[in-house]
Length: 218
Image (cartoon, rainbow, N blue to C red; front, side, top):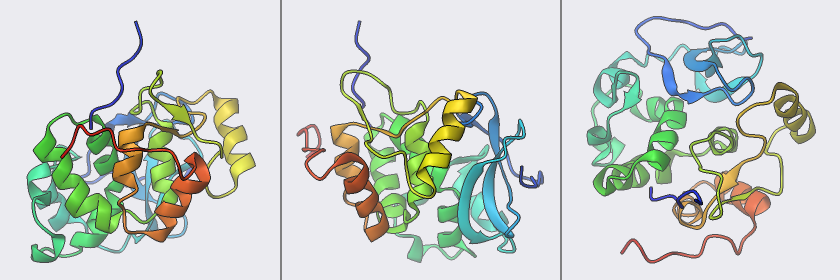
């Protein structure tokens, strides 16, 4: 994605999984995130510095992600070449579930990426059909992956879930993202996501008139 330029404790399972080293915990601002298991036996991305809160997923930890990880990730990060065609064409166990589990990394990479074929593939075959959890999107938009400068603006809500408690926790710990951030082009691309939950989150958080297409993409 082309961003505006800047102006002048759950249980963690470490097996074959890699640290999500370029996506930091928003609550402490320093810890890396690792794939682990929540108390509800669901996959969750958990701060390795021991913060109590994490990025939850809706996927049972009993689902074996090894085949998906071998095919779709490299060094713990999404491999864009895997997402060049619909996931239904991939004969891999738990391919959709794996994409949903790894969605925080996919979103983070999508926003940071400046190579069109890469981020467009992630958008078309992973994000549009399979991003369906507003908590995941909210977490990523609170990180420093979205540059806080003249071309961005903060959301008017503090996020889904229990907003006041969530906002207070971030503020107390001095996390890197006290509110979700957005810019026009990113809003446009996220607005194409199929999930009603994501569409509702975008409107409630950033308004329905934000995100006019910039024309930089055909």
